[in-house]
Image 1 (cartoon, one colour):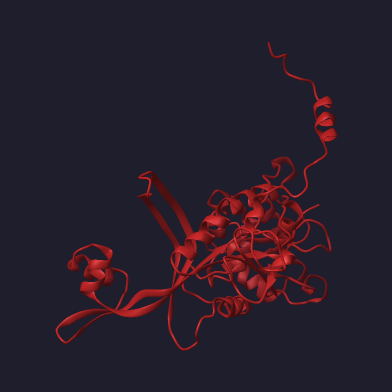
Image 2: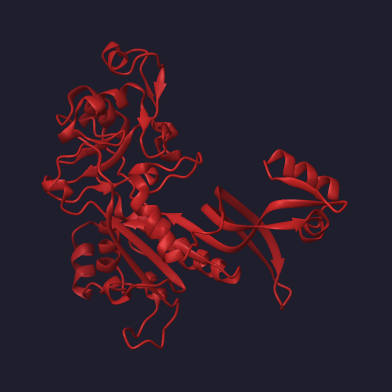
Length: 368
């Protein structure tokens, strides 16, 4: 039966005083802020008002977000990360010491210089319409998890022309969003305007199945029971198809956008998800193991042997592997396919399987 592996950042099987102190604040050690449920589980918020036992463990709060970081399907197996903050969190500008390895690997493969500054923006939404050469109208409506860029000094008049807005509007935006304005030789400059390189960082973690109320396997119920009874609880399973559908619908598009802007897109995933991709599609990621980024880039991390050998209550994900390659068929000797094969079927089931499935249930009617 599935169990929660990490709760508010800490392993249940190695729960200690530090983990208990962290729980009392409902704190996420990766965000260095109160847990927000991963940003997409607000419907799973937990009310403490009618539970004296929960209030005793987490005093002074009426509601907390569901603090489940990962779920282990079976004992001894690698857990599945279900919260994107567990892989990487830069949302609040905090850089956790527990994610230093992940940031280091990103810097390495993105070829970021230690001698120049970069800025980071979370949840960057772009919604535009544009005409093609054939005068067809196309729309683009996506949100990027993080966009990292360099910075440069730029005249405010240049910014005005670039953004096609009045100078006074540029000044208001700069002041509102904390950009530095400086006067030099009777000209106003924006000292830290975004500039190349552009690196898009996308984080893909697993989803959970809905769970059943009567078995207390819904995610909020599982979180409550884990808080009160530690490892003695049940948890939902992993919804492989949903996470795959979310990723495959964006992987190629966001990679192409990064290239169109003269930059790159790097996807952060867990190693078990990378394995699932290889097993369920026509793409074998091991053929794309690389030491440099390309058109499509998947950077995976894992728990490694820490799940069985480590005694630490709070683990840092390591074991980085970069899988990179062309979108379409490449000319490199190592492969005859491109990452577009990630949307193709791995192995079609035999035709006898459809007959078996049809014969195993009654038809609803006869077509007339």
